[in-house]
Image (cartoon, rainbow, N blue to C red; front, side):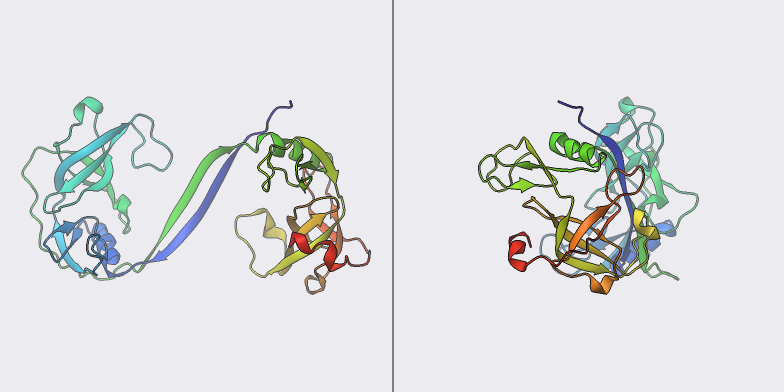
Length: 316
């Protein structure tokens, strides 16, 4: 058996969202070094605040200021901080119930080691030097043995309140395609398309997954398919994608499902070599390879007559 492939991958994108009145006040308050909670009809103060009571589901907007000091309710030690976490040295993740609140806020505690952390310890907020209206305006919590802070009674009304935020999401991981797709990828590097046949229903799947999605049986019999195929269905892309390999492709362009000859599952790829408004179901296409590429750059028309609908209707 050949070595199974693996590679590091990063998924990263900015997430933009608007803020309602409660979240706007909370984040704007952090910018101004004020911590706001929201009071429920039964008198509980929730921090961080939410717009609907988690017990009754009724809308709540009664903002109330709480203290910057509080008590650790539970914690866990982080021996190896990761990229983007609040501190670059080992720290504790803590749930802190701020004075005046009935729920706990999750954040980092700057402590010299796990022996210095315990449930019930008193802490206070260490504010970031530059604040923009985000949870990171709280740089972290730090141990505190002084008197509780006294909230100033802020009403939640601010000049220039935040109306929206941009959160940057990122996931770093190692991807392994498994045995079946490893063989498929290696065949592509030789400009061949290889699927796998189910021993029961005899269908050929590409890209292979190592098992038949219909019968549930493991697949191992390799079958070379294509290279030509038929467009079964397609979509016209009118918006240029950001941060992708498609940045140099002018819109509009077409992505299509293509049933390669001999395959019982359609794969998707870009269609080129033809005006976007001339792409159609049944169009016969073939792969176009660029030097050194591990997969086809796109598919183009072969010049053959269109395939009859009955030959690909089961693959839509």
